[in-house]
Amino acid sequence: MLNFAIIGTNWITAAFVTSAHATSKWQLSAVYSRKEETARDFAAKFTANAAIYTSLEALAADQSIDVVYVASPNSLHFAQAKQLLEARKHVVLEKPATSTSAELDILFRTARAHDVFLLEAFRHLHEVNFKILRDALPRLGPLYGASLNYAAYSSRYDNVLRGETPNIFSLDFSGGSLVDLGVYPISAAVALFGPPKAQQYFPVMIRTGADGGGVVLLQYDGFAVSMNASKIYTSTAPSEIYGEKGTLVIPSITDITSVKFLDAQKKGKSEELGKEKESLNLKEEADDFARIIEEKDWKMAEKLEKLSRAVLTVTENLRRANGLKFTVEKEA
Image 1 (cartoon, rainbow, N blue to C red):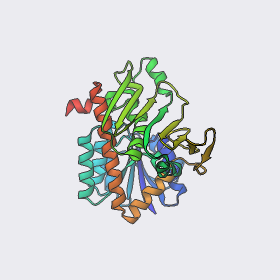
Image 2 (image 1 turned 45 degrees about the horizontal axis):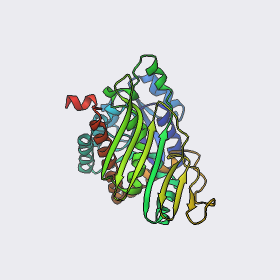
Image 3 (image 1 turned 60 degrees about the vertical axis):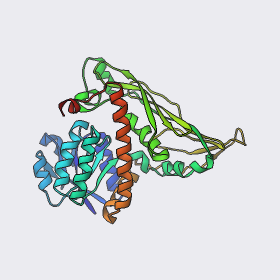
Image 4 (image 1 turned 90 degrees about the vertical axis):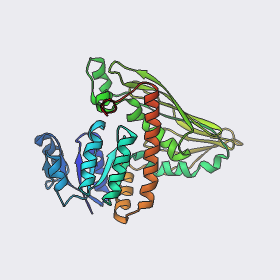
């Protein structure tokens, strides 16, 4: 059983705790928040025994904690994770792991130096149906292209329209659509096809100075991947991968409910490859992470590290090519 703490008390943190508990491999043992009342209210939803911390130093010093799940604003990830890794805690970082590749490199070096794991939480890559999609790629033969989409209107854009600047749409907090929703299709592409040869981004800029959404193009040898990612509009378009022998279709890039193979030689007919979707959408991720930590699976951790580095390199290049510079970069 892994005793874990959480930093951040939002919906994704609650989802992770619920999913982690469902695996029977994790136990929430501590909650950190800047406000004690907020931490106590969050902890009360899951356990009566969690320690409450408003000091990161005190949390890091708690020897009973094995792992810390960090889901604070993006710009805080680096400093918080570094302190926890130095205290020999395994760290699960919500995507995006860090604001820059330089920060991520420091964190992975720190993790190795202290013999602990640093794992980035790309939940969709752990879904059974994503793995089925990946394993079905050879059925397509030579690849011709793909369209991977994730565009969903955010209620926090309402705040932007009212003249406010929510963290997720603030460059001060390393926000924007690309690093929040865009990383879902980008990380999927990297997991399926590897790092791209080149990339382009055509963003829709919003009042806060961040990107609200846009189109991403990733170039590979012989084919390209287009992506529609946004937090200021919604798309219901499926995601598809095209090959000489057929097409693979999924209704969404996350929470995948089906994986269909359309045979190029059998027009109008489809074959369902997918399995029933897990009802708790972070359980598969929590299960995988627990196994990696408990079995000390450094080989798998290295694969995930390479993926995290490649995804951040793509988003970093796309941002900088479009003048989207985070405050932490300006201060460096």
